Amino acid sequence: MSANTPGTVGGSTSTSHTRRTHVVAHCFLCQRHVSQLLAHFRGSHADHHFTTAEIAQFGMVACECGHPCAGASSVKGHMSRGREGHAARLQRLAAAANLGQPSGLGGQSEHPREPAIQPEGRTLEEQHKVLFSLPGVYAPLPPHVVPLFVESANRLASTYLHDPTEQHLLEILALVKVGLVPDLAPGRLRSLKTRLAHYPLVRIPDPRPQPESDRLPTSQGQRAARQIELGRLSRAGRILTESASMAPRTAETVDALRALHPVGPDDPFGNTAWAPLSHLRLDHACLVRALKTFAPDTEPGISGWSVPLLSPLMKEPNAPFSKFLLQLTRQIANGAAPGQQMLCASRLLALEKPGGGVRPLGVGELIYRLAMKAILAVGFSGHGLLPSQFGVGTPGGVEPLLRLIERAVDGSLPVRFDHLADVDLRNAFNEVDRTHMADEVRRHCPGLYRAAKWAYGASTKLFYRGPNGLVELASSQGVKQGDPLGNCLFSIAYRPVLEDVQRELGPDALASAYLDNTSILSIGSQMHQVFEIFARHAHRGFHLRPDKCHDYNLQRTGR
Image (cartoon, rainbow, N blue to C red; front, side):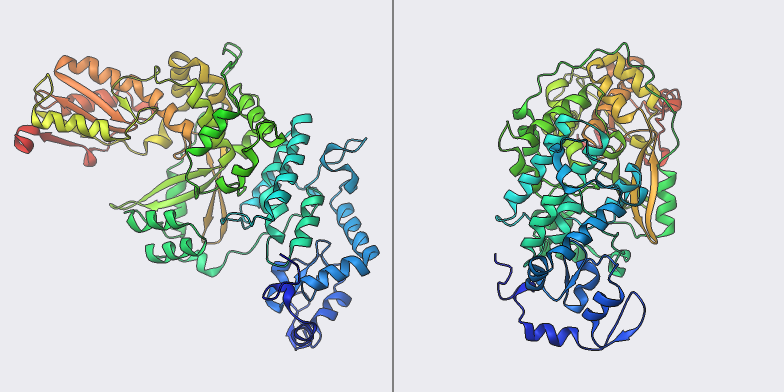
């Protein structure tokens, strides 16, 4: 689309520019009322780096160099007529951020370039945290933008392949919100091309203040309507059919989330010198199959990478970005990938539970989830779990467990069970002891030990949007719900509990579980003994909730 297409920002005429820039307006920088706001910005605040988000309310747009312009066509004129001033502003911007010159982009310079998106002395951790508060993109990219994005992503991937450091990984993670989104608007194609070409030598946008509407609890209908506006129709459908709703963003919700994430051991996995190196047959096809398991509107993580953004980058197996993903996945499998704190950080959601309280759900980086799904598909066959454990590598979801109970009710099992103990665990995923989990992974699935230690061997960040902005929590115990590896590790850690139940109750019982949802069929009521067995495993993080545990007489229920 041309920058001057009518109907876009750049399609306004010079007359309309004059009208909207010569009215009396309030300057948000110096708190003065001025009649010629554009001229005021350029004169009184010439050193300020303007962003389109700041001045869009006045009908203006900002150039990549931070110069305020009346519209997209004005940006084009500024870049051609004021080329020296444009270059000088970019040069000052780079100097202020302690950066090298644009000639050092993509690792093509003869001299090593300085760290790129590191303005004002920010650490890598601080830069990554900023991404949480920046807007993302949810709809598929316009066709004319895809090649620009692919070219930039492949350039960054080539740099990482040459020098796989945390800095270069961060540059890839931040590409969406720092390199793409700030100029992803109608009439900004020229600015977008410039920004992507210069990235990562660009300024990180200032975090966007949280809109008041985002702070208020919304109904399911309002949430669904918002998803429809963003083009996420299937997600809107899920919102309308789900029973859980988002918990209100209050101090009480924050306190509840803190309580649900207890402090864990400092080094639960210990030394991995004994652990075998991964020799998994990971290839590009594994990653493509893993990507296809995600719905197109899968919620993105902190960086904003989504399925529609990854899909065009993975079409060619020999493309730099495809090679980057494969190398990163192999590094994770061997516990040697850089940037563990960035890749394992999650956005935290709080769902209201029907009986009261909140249920935390972590939304991890999609690149991390993709890599873990590929690793599990190749490296985990289910042999580390009991035949009665479902939910990891088993087809049909919870259906096999439900069918088992149905058969017990109608009496078609070889053993005529007459009781069902339905037990409920307290905050199971977040409280399972990581040291115990590490021991069980070592015992039953040593091939995953290095990847498990890489992901869960240290505390990682959880970011929640609270009533007053960003709230930072820590995950140092248990596993994160929503993490593909988390379900696997929890089930491995839960195995000895089910083994003890089965061993002590004997052949007159059958203990089965779908992740933490546990059902115990027996001849006669065994609930008292079940409580005693679980009490011996409480130090491992498995605590029953007596008020949620039920003992059913199947003879009264179904026969």
